[in-house]
Image (cartoon, rainbow, N blue to C red):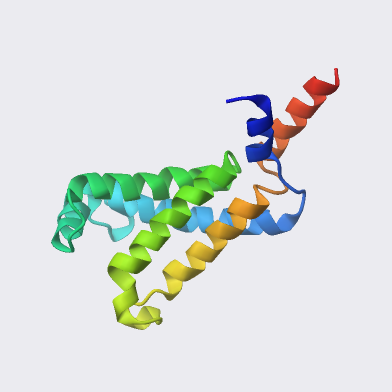
Length: 153
């Protein structure tokens, strides 16, 4: 990957808006990923989540659970740190589109009916981060500054 591509991926503003989105979405994604991967927080772990995913037609269930859980857990960690925010947010946005379409859309909007409102909120947060980047106090910002300083020398 060349320096220009790296700069575009890491470039971000210095506003607090992205920080607020990153931390809140990151915590939620890490928790949901931990449910799927490790059975934390009342989750079913890879085996149980994989069986459920297979039951709704997402095959092979175990690999789908591993993919979704990994995207949520590691993507959420990336958001919290503000490291590779744009790519992480992009993968999380795709994960939310899949969740909305395959699980929640037929139940309507409201969460009380297992609808898509929560997934839609997370999708919106993820898409906003794809466009804005990591913002203030992100590792992306620090790395971008280091790259700029090295180019100036």
